[in-house]
Image 1 (spheres, rainbow, N blue to C red):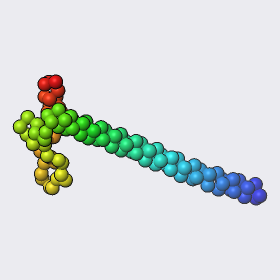
Image 2: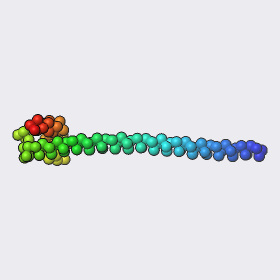
Image 3: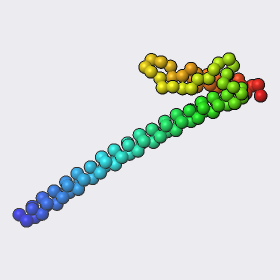
Length: 107
């Protein structure tokens, strides 16, 4: 009878340890998923900041090279928060890159 009680106690302890290990594995998987999502978010933010940097550099270069606010007959406009259904700005990134390249041709 004592042997059965001892075996039952060992099985309970084993089951308890098994549950703890499963919980830790689940926590570890959750942590890894969170870390992966955090890395993806950081990459997206970094990419967006690089795009903004190129846009701002291109915009500034076009202003500096022309010596005024006018760029090839267009007046530059600062970005403003957009309302629903409206464009984000007068120029998009492709327009700004084209303007920067056009000004570089003259120099």
